[in-house]
Length: 498
Image (cartoon, rainbow, N blue to C red; front, side, top):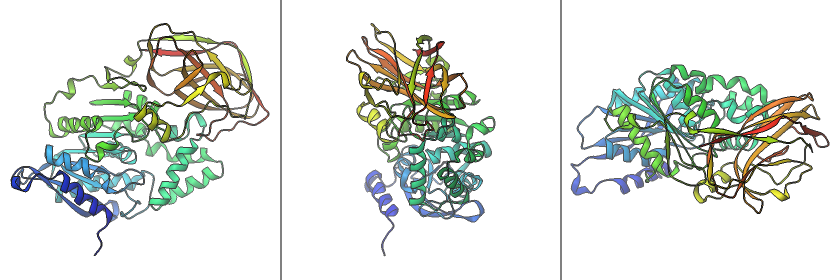
């Protein structure tokens, strides 16, 4: 009889990581493929990795829901390492509605979140789990589920949320601008690997009909930010600066609102790239931190994690980790750069772009290849370009840059894209950060645009350049060809410095 691919992969992981047979009495692990009843009895398929050679338990229990479009093999490598090295009982399961698990995709709805608690119940009864030592975590969809479950299930002592969202609407509809590449990617993956439920089908219909605002009511109950006061577990958040699905601005605000033990780790990369290899059980600094976090707040080991500074960031264009007592402390001071008046035509693309979701951030993270631009070639008729002074000594952009713009749109609805670049003497620029904003109406108004948070090293002799245009392929904008946008006096760029 043919074995399912997940079983074959799990067997390979077990073969690679298992201790030699001569050491059979030494600590090891066992892998089993199980069916676990989720909320309402819905069958969820899972790999259950339990420690061996450590007695009969009970063992600290970790529950890891799978990412969007990914099955239960996702964390088996990490689970085997956690069981073998630290004695955890770990359950890696396929989220409801995807692959071999039953049910329909409800976009982290009540049933999906309740599944986390039902898997915990099963782990306590059948996997030697200790009811006093429970942790949950995951990547992307699994991370969001874990945060939402922690707000509802007081048994959860610790959460590790990697590449997570905390505000679903803010992630996919930033400043009333649809993040179209991200939405299309999620919809395609959902239909290809799972069974969309009514909520997802209705959301797609509204999106296709240009009614994305009608999707927003599903966001608050599915956003951990709406339930942050109920989260008492110790929370570790790890994300990438260039995450094309869940950008870091939502995370820094959420992190500040958490009241319990917490850690924020931001590093180069795109969605799920920084922690990718660690999930397979390979050496990875993010998963090393995950293990230490669970050891401290699930197992109760005195490993010093609680004495370390809670905010750890790695500059997006190279350099080691930097530690701070809070997100606000990442910024030591701010500088204001005045922006002159300008007028541009709307609806025409320029070479200023934010890049491609998953691809551009991954190139930045793995190869230090940023999204580039030649600023002399940016069409001044379709984009406003403001050049800051040359920085004669090295420095950094450290925090959340803000553009204060006095704007007069020429159409009923206009989308602006703000890009901040580091530019050398030849005009060649590297994208530091960006942000869209969609404006309604033609009245003159002051617009404050918070670009995405970043830590970026600026080389001596280079300058910062702000570009604002009206078209970006990553987003579904609203700028009409033939209209115009005027930027008046009294505008400035606020640059956070480290």
